[in-house]
Amino acid sequence: MAKALNVAVRVPPWLLGILFALLGIRSLTNPDRAAAFFGYAFPNGGLGLSSLVGHSASWALTIAVCLLLGLIRKERSWFYPPMMLFGFFALGRIAATLLHGAPVHPERMIPELAFVGLLYLAARQTPASTR
Image (cartoon, rainbow, N blue to C red; front, side, top):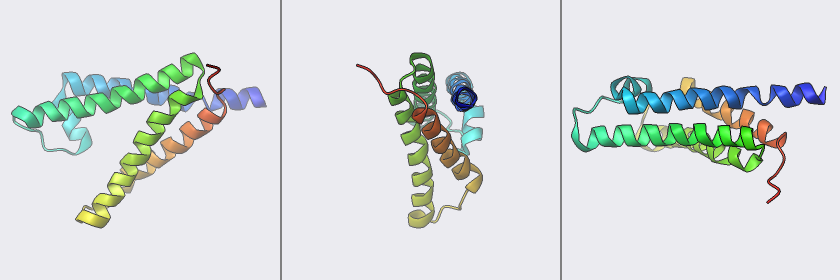
């Protein structure tokens, strides 16, 4: 049973790692589709376009690299940065709603919080770094 649980908690991080790697690559190569995915108005150029590509690619690739390193190296510390990013995404959405009147988007917030929970479970089943 423990072996099955250990395998089961590794599947979501692998899927998320692959998904966010593809999302980061899409942000670099096809920023207009990435903007649509994130709900941004596509900037015509200049600093807006540079920021969209840079920010969306950097966080997506950071999530992917951290998750894949955590899975490959079997070290739980690599799961913490993606957990923090997803948690802060949700916190930012709550702040945008409460402080700035943005509409609530549970279809984005609930998966982000679920990812935090899934990664927490994966981290708990992964050994701490021995270094």
